[in-house]
Each structure stands twice: as structure tokens, then as C-alpha cells.
Length: 73
Image 1 (tube, rainbow, N blue to C red):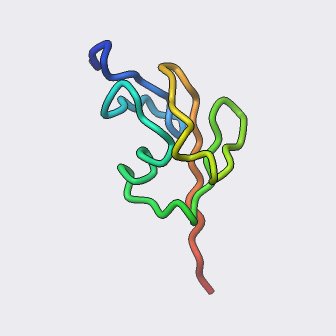
Image 2: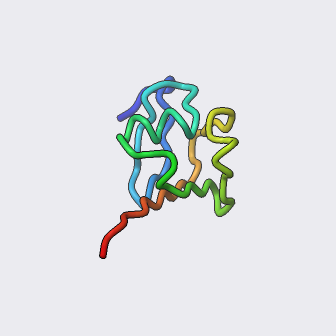
């Protein structure tokens, strides 16, 4: 079970313990090894603009959806 210093969010329907008490969208995207230009992030049903990734931080209990766009033919 995560400690109080590691908040837990719901990420794409699954419990996910953040790596530290203060994690930004940009940090989580990097931690998940995703390309910021190829994802869309929604926190508590609100889409977060890419320009806000570095300044938007998660709170314990947030519901987060990350959609990774994949090209193909």
C-alpha cells in the first residue's frame, strides 16, 4: 500500500501510485515513456492543454485518462 507521501490516482481505470507527492502531468507522461506530442490527458473529466502539462499537478484520488495516439496505415 502506498505511503501518505505517494498519492494514488486512478490511471486509465487502475490504481496508480505516483512516484512522489508532487507529480506534474509532464513528469507522469515521461515516467510512462510516452511522447507528450502524441497523448491527450484528461483529469477528472477535464482535458488538459499540452501547454499546461508542466504546471498541472495531480492530487490524491484524481481520475486520469491518458490516450496515446498511434499512427499507422
